[in-house]
Length: 305
Ligand SMILES: [Zn+2]
Image (cartoon, rainbow, N blue to C red; front, side, top):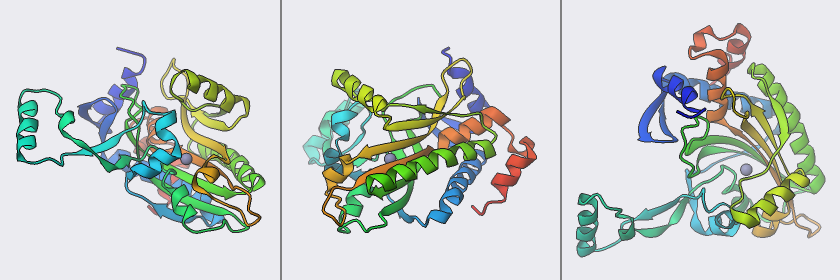
């Protein structure tokens, strides 16, 4: 048993999560889902005054857009792609022989144009690029959905498939940095409402390989990424439940997002891990929402979901 097993076991034995036989891939009970949707509604209530444009995408995205975004260069170990059977009948017989023999039948499949979305915001940048020049007030998008990262684990907050609620800001450097700053303050207030102990920390993304270590160090040095961390697993470092990411001109350059003066737009995204926040609530307040503090119940159960 590792340090993370007790937290997962508790959520499974209390019926909040449902075992699938694969680490990091769980079903959710009605109670879990109800709380998650209320957490999502709460984050969107905090954002309501901003007038964000809502976009929703399927949990898959264009492989071409994914390649262009640089994800496969920076995070190949986390990527998931959709491969399908496109062969003829002899190829099908070969596939079934491998399958019946309990062998890996992946070789009989071919890549498709679809990959699994690694973050909710990835399909937003190419979608915005189709709209032409960024307006003076910039763009603000509310996007949410299931994301996939291949990191099987018994750590309950490190799921392979999970949902993120993100707010993406595109505009001048000053506009996007002010937006990120505002959300770092809002996120603290949000955690307060949820009755969750929390801190804001400088962080880095899990870039792949030796070159990735340099990228991660650079990201920290320039304070490009902050995380809202909340204790979930006793004795282990706190879990990142929110992130505040300044991309500089990376996505602007990649997708040709231009400001009216011809310069490249800056972007940032603010993301909340909905399963992580929900798990943190159950860990902090117990498995029975009916017993949670009145103030917390008042905040979550007064929302229209
Ligand atoms: Zn993002």
